[in-house]
Image 1 (cartoon, rainbow, N blue to C red):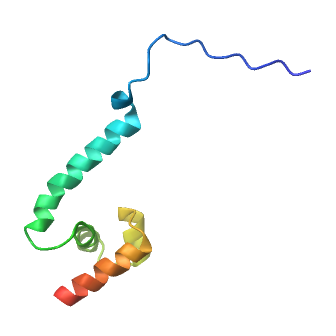
Image 2 (tube, rainbow, N blue to C red; image 1 turned 60 degrees about the vertical axis):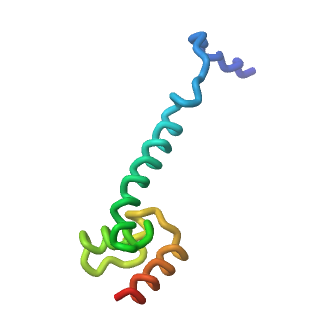
Length: 89
C-alpha cells in the first residue's frame, strides 16, 4: 500500500494577495500600459495599433502570427487594428 504524501510544513505566514507575484506583475503591466498609452494617444492610435507598429518597426514584413507571438493579441484584435492602420495610411 502506498504511503500517504507528507504535507509541507507551513511557515505561519499568511498569503498577502498584494505581494503575490502574479498580482504584482499584473499591476506592473497595467502601469506600463498606462505610460505607453500616453505615447500612442499623442499620435492618435490605439494600444493595439501601437503594439503592431512596434513589431513592424523591428521586423519588416512581420506576419500576423509574428505579431501574435510578440504582443499576445488575439487574431481578431490584430486584424481589426491592421484594418484601422490601413485606413489611416
